[in-house]
Image (cartoon, rainbow, N blue to C red; front, side):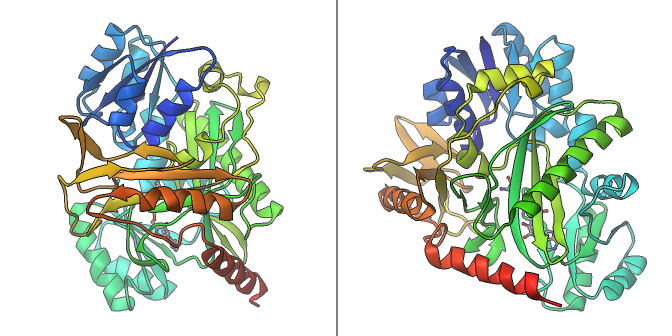
Length: 435
Ligand code: AMP
Ligand code: GLY
């Protein structure tokens, strides 16, 4: 089987590594904008091109007789790469543009949830003008402000330390109007988690829940990033969740997939990513992504026991309900090493060297290889993942590996530590007990 992976980050390295474990021995190909050494090593051939260059990607896929394509990042989904590959006769385990807009058009996504009565939608409005937007910000009193388009998770600001007061919220929202419409919504209070599923147009196969860490610095301080690291517990549920939280989140994702088909006429295929906030009133949707999360893909794909090529075949033939998709009951902790100064003023073109990483898995992200050496680009560089029976053991494995990555790098030591997890549990207990 010839399989194409589009994208060159940590998520795509994890996708490629999971495919390389297949007992069916598929031939793997990649399109990436820079040479990710981890992906390159696992592939028979790769093309260095922009993932959004639809013509080049389709041309490469046709030349290599690709049977199934997987698309990692959001940008190629937003330019209709899945549609173009299908038009060229290639099966695609990634959503077409009409349904992928659940991610790249946040205003559309919120209105879609409201119009279709999907549970877990916060109070929100979408604006193109300042006057009514200011009034709505006053009315809600505590808000999150987001540009409607794609921002790599970095354009969203919430009241609290990022927007100190209503005036700051109004100013920030007004500044975003220059780039397009703006979504203003209630500031949800609780703990966040990620639930991902494989989807075949109709059926969903859920993965273990994961918690990402968006803030750049320890103690959840500093600017939002693409995600500094993530963990899951052995089994399906995170330590601060109860089963009901996860079953409600699953129902929301199932209802979303059904409504997407009803509204657009297109079946959603690929990975669906639900980011939820567990509030006092149950799970609320922060956003949907039309792809795996990065870093969350590295947690769950490292645990996938079912042959990934079988999962892809089931996605493209609509037979996921007939496949038992299994994950090992292990905990994982993933930590990213990012360039110093990331995300606001990152260094770049600095060498990264990998020492003894023990039992950890290593995934290259935004790096490039030159003369056999690996260099940073200014975005998240290398991730390490510990896999073990408990979060604490997995954390030790990941941290040991991180300590042996050398370069002008920064990371969060606190991800997966007992202290931080206890804070999540205590926080959730307080939220659930609030009157
Ligand atoms: P996003 O790019 O939508 O994932 O948002 C980035 C981060 O902003 C999320 O991980 C949340 O921490 C935060 N956020 C987004 N929307 C809200 C909201 N309505 N209430 C509280 N926090 C939010
Ligand atoms: N980790 C967040 C995302 O992939 O969007």
